[in-house]
Image 1 (cartoon, rainbow, N blue to C red):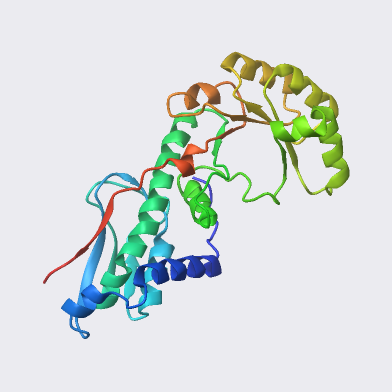
Image 2 (cartoon, rainbow, N blue to C red; image 1 turned 180 degrees about the horizontal axis):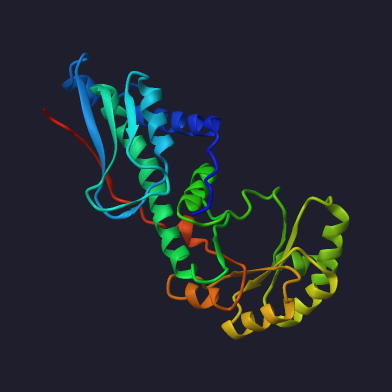
Amino acid sequence: MHDLPELNPLIVEAAVRAALAEDFGRAGDVTSQATIPAQAQARAAFGARKAGVIAGLDVARAAFRLVDPAVTFEAHVQDGATVAPGAKIAHVAGPARAILAAERVALNFLGRMSGIATLTRRYADLAAHTQAKICCTRKTTPGLRAFEKYAVRCGGGMNHRFGLDDAVLIKDNHVAVAGGVVSALRAAKRHVGHLVKIEIEVDRLAQLDEVLGEGADVVMLDNMSLADMREAVRRVAGRMRIEASGGVNLDTVKAIAETGVDLISVGALTHSASVLDLGLDVEIG
């Protein structure tokens, strides 16, 4: 697994505060206020109900801390760890009202992020015997991109662009409006500085030949056949990195990786991952 970046604490706090505000509404957790004495203490365990890869422990921790700093959060695994059904992931202890009030926000983040990490691991494992790396895309939940891309890293994937300002990615519509592959590449090179990488999408080998004549940092093969991907790898011959995109799923990713491409981008990692089934159960006695 790749080294994990740290989620910016400012981003975590802002997102978790917003989620808590959404959940608390105008009156807070009226159920806990009505049924739980203010002085009551509790201890509860986060458990995995299905096997998966964990991501988002610090985000879950922040939910409890922001509701009441007196709640302690003890993680038993690290982000990126694979857990079996029934595994205890973490414990929280402290004021019972605070634990119950923060529970859903903590589980929403932890379950969503762990689901992405779990799906990413499945893709990464299928390509592990090749040089190809699995990448996410910008097809993320609005406002949660940093969290979802972090979860991809926890699952053994790599991050593509975080936004439009990371790098130049010339897609088919850019090529059409710019007047062709060569025109688009030349315009991009005139516009950006020497530290900005340029990637361009092609959907046929004739376009790839134009890219090879003009030069780019990365070429994206969009919805190409396996035979054309292999031919593209042969023609590029290591002169630039090659990314495969389109038509990638758990049934096709292995064969795509075996064509020799360097990167495989998969929008499904973030737009179609199922939540990992996790629960928080109060321990009595």
